[in-house]
Length: 433
Image (cartoon, rainbow, N blue to C red; front, side, top):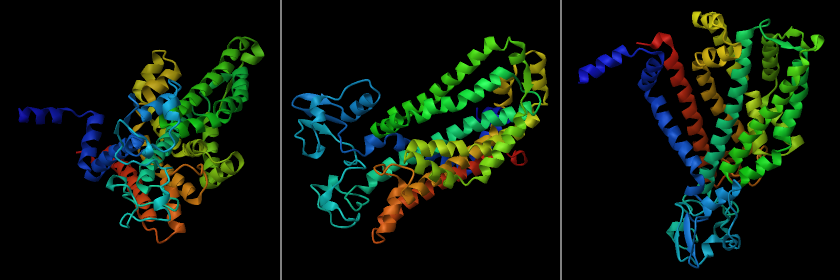
């Protein structure tokens, strides 16, 4: 039986199987992937790990699930019960029964009895060992461990969502640049004019007009924030559908319907050169100074300036792929160019892009940490690793404020760098054996 399995492994020589087999040989990359799963899980379950609200409680004979209720309220699916709205300090509530979170502190909870930088090994004035601040407190008594756990979610949100935006833009523009070149993409005059006219309008409606709504949703709960953030992209696509619907009947007019070649390759390459010449940190500072501090702005700006490397990778791959036989066969069968690009060309060109995405997530986390460290980019009430690290700079004697967030940033960035190296080695044809 074992011999048959080995024979089957030898027979399975698909490209995906070879990449997986090569990746598994890289032990640092494999362990980095496992640690990444753990970090993402901690960020996803942050509210259920560190929170001053209990997971379950029974008050005056009524059972409540406060954390789940907060998520439902944030999504607009329920209303907060009057009994829970009256509670200001969850530690002083007289429960009939209660199940608390492992860490009984929210990142914004202040313990004035342990303010002014109480260390993890210092004597702490607490009710019981359950309320011990395992990583100490900051200047106003906020629990550092709770801030670290919730900061994990912020880091993952910024890294993953910023690079999701960058990946979508980079893959779309890079694929069009590589496949169409400067003479294959043709559009009617009216369609070009209307799309150029509606792009700033759609961006304003989808993102600028909803910035406060998205920011409030993130402050309420992560799920509601993500929902509103994704809805902004859906709204952008809906608004951009309008000019294309308007252009459909108008293009029957000979002058308006005359097609023009769009030098998409030149446009994309010049745009890449312009964006790469602008320091990203200075651009974020300019946006924050004019529009105000917001986590949404940070993710948007990092995504809008971080797509250039992905676009260059996918463009280079499409320049090779577009002349292959299966692309020519699809064109001969009469498939639309959009279908050929999205169904055939892009799926066979994504492997090197994954490397750029892995390194890009690490860069996005570092950028957000640097902004938080400087005290800009994110609202003052949002706890991040960089903000904790900044408090350690103010009080050098509070070593825990420098060691713990600094180590978390180092580990997370190293994990994504090792994953990028592992993917690069796995797709290298010279290493396939």
